[in-house]
Length: 191
Image 1 (tube, rainbow, N blue to C red):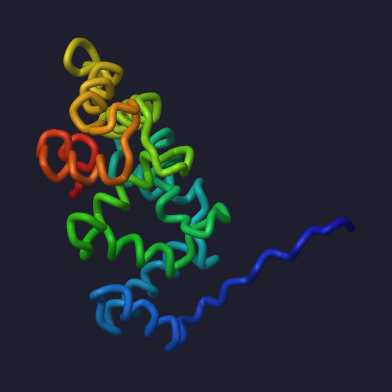
Image 2: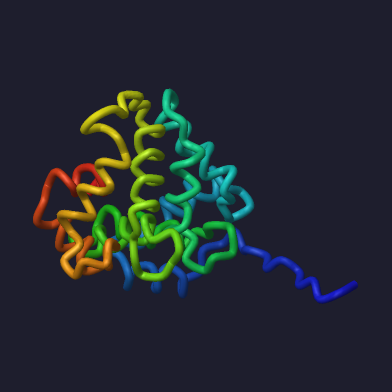
């Protein structure tokens, strides 16, 4: 009834074409790609990670943190086709970007998480939301004075916003993170 489309089924098999695409877009070897795939399929037998499963993975790494809010935003750069799930190719390409990419590519990945409206800009409200989510993730409870997410977001905008529009473009974000290690440590801590 209606216009419901059947969900696209995912093959659990890794084809040579898929390996070729992943090899040409990452620095992983054939064997590494196959090992990643085997591990991915063991953890995600459906061949996809949904938001609930994504949260479960983060809970393993941050057992004392509140991961839900952070994961809501961290999921977005992985789900490049915006279908609400992460398939193996999306997963491995994101991992490669975060671990093998040059600094600019890794900062673009981080920018995409902060760009909640997907308009190519980060506003102060978005910064406050993500800084608060990072605090929740790591169990940071001291949010007074210089630790206040509102103050931190306002300071970051003031320091990095070169054109005075009270927003950060991708260029401003990347340049600011590259030129200010303290800001990079806060906004992109794993880079």
